[in-house]
Amino acid sequence: MELDIKIMSLADNMASILNFQTDDTSIYWREPLFNAYPFLDKEKCFNLCWSKRQKYLTTEFTKFYHKIKLNLQNKCMTSQKIWNENKKNINDIYSKVFEIDCQQILNDMVVEIALNPICPRDIQNKRFLVFWNGDELNFIKTSLHEIIHFVWFYIWQNHFKDNIKEYEAPDLKWILSEMVIDTLVKKSDIGKLYPESYQAKPAYSYFYDMQINNKLVLDELSSIYINAQNIIQFMEQAYLYCQINEKEIRRQIL
Image (cartoon, rainbow, N blue to C red; front, side, top):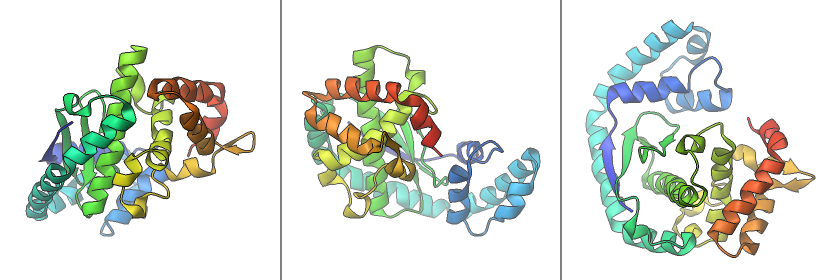
């Protein structure tokens, strides 16, 4: 596996930011932008119509992007250095956990240093974002998290031969991939790579209270993982569990 780290363009930054600021986006996803950028007027933005909201955010972030251009360049260089220093260990551990030689796959992944505090991924184009204003631990945590998804779906597609478009929200396969982050960080050697401050809840927060038949969903997935003979069996059984309980899982997602 290899990462090529770049600065995200202003146009792509705005597309990413605006994608999480539509009227039908939940507060869970909208609020992080305003927590990260106190200079934004959240109440004003929430009450603007869509066209004016786009204009307001584009104007504010255009000024900000040019103001911090040097910071972005420094973050890009620092992040690439961190990856280069750690990639051998990461490749070795992911190879062991996923039962595949990770040095021979995904050698064209791209990381973009971005303004968006939410870091969406693009499985098809092997691309994900890292927030520019995070520290070294945030870069490591985000990269490890997203690389789990890329390796997971690389193996998944080779086995299931399904449509890569099904790997993004709100598909059930996407939901499962987000839940198993907790399992793989806590129950495999990937946890040794994770910064300690992120180990307690490495998955989305709303998964930790999710229950089916009075049992925590993440505990059930961890049990499936521990008892599975290999990663493929874990995928099959975990997905079957999610299919059986899909209605209730979706009801509890924010």
